[in-house]
Length: 282
Length: 285
Image (cartoon, rainbow over all chains, first blue to last red; front, side):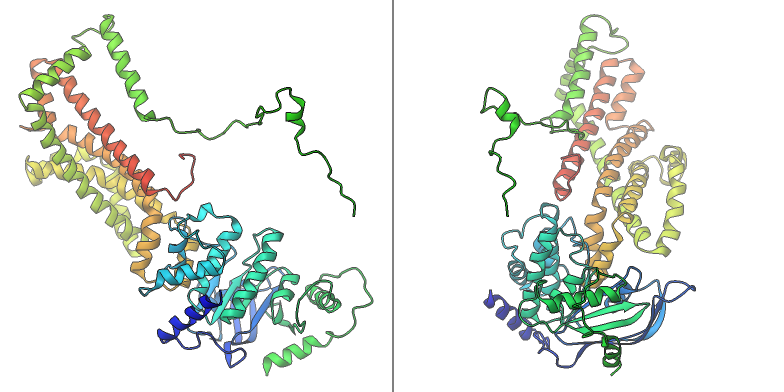
């Protein structure tokens, strides 16, 4: 497996792409300043949002329905056409998007979906390697409808990663999967991100998913960054860890969900709203 | 923890019946049409011909109304032997083929222009709808004035009949493509030409093929009509000539040839559809 990664990065280096494997936390992958977006006169969806994501950083974005998560992601992906707004956005050259649905073209075989729009003579080889990385070797010639939901989403991941993105935008990519498949996908995504080191912005409804996967969790509230917490759980992130539970309750509280009373939740993260805001504006 | 499920691994249904090895599955009645019948497309036609044979043999059908199948077969053999049938068929096939090709090309181009550009839509869609409400056959007098009574007029009449179903179904197929695929195409950064090739063409293909089935029938319909207007060759000429001599058997041979042409053409299009659309999972499979 390691050889795959090596070859992939080597090839992109030959192609003259800079930062194929960006060093973690060197410079910013994403810079958003004072972003406003609204769909109608009534009110904005994003109201002056500021956000920085470092290169190679994994950020999970949670928030209630309608809090502007998808709007922000679409703005970063350059897909927000029917909205009005202002603000400055800086994103890297190579951005990949993973949607909630796998969005595989039903009339193209899996490998052709992965290599869609990919130039170069080695495109098919790169596609095969990417499929092998997500555990779909041997399924290159299958039609999308022959894959299970989890496999389809893995193929979509392969399609994103084969482009060696400096920024990976994922809009609830596991939202439609069953719980077991979800857990497997978490492991896979973490492994892939550790290998390719893209900056990641992952939208999710699932607080546990956010904590398990991300370096940083952001709660979007009324179109601005409400809470910005660094996940300092080293090693294995398991729900049995009391710090996990603590962070979870804190984030759920930010989302307006009160868990059954638990005195062990101390004030460790109580100041994080202020701290987060300070950090973002810094 | 206690193990809750410790039942023996045989289902109660098979255990209850005496023959333990008999596969007693409960198979639900399928709501789809079920498995494909081999050569199923021909069954209806064979039944029809069989009725014709029985009707003629029992004297239920007067030979002056409709010739017996064997008389028709004999006449057909005679026409083949003196070469008139092949000659007529070749001329008719070329006419229909040219008209079909021209109509398909124009229909597809118009559908893509109208489907992918708003300006194209406002320019193209109106005129095609206008054309749609005027039957091609009603245009023949005008086309004769413009192009004379030669092959040109015939091919153009057929093409005009073909254009409309191809346009309508291709346009509809194209517009029915899931908008999310266009969004995906944008995020993977492919250009307009690549978008046409990888998303639009395959996405509109099912619509186009349905249009093609209608188009083939339209082409034959137009062919029959134009071949009865001042023609000196083709199957239609054969039929018109026979009509003035009261040769029912020759007329029927002509009709059978038209029917066979239509059946073969439709079969070809359906076969292409099945081969080209293997990626779909529908009730057809």
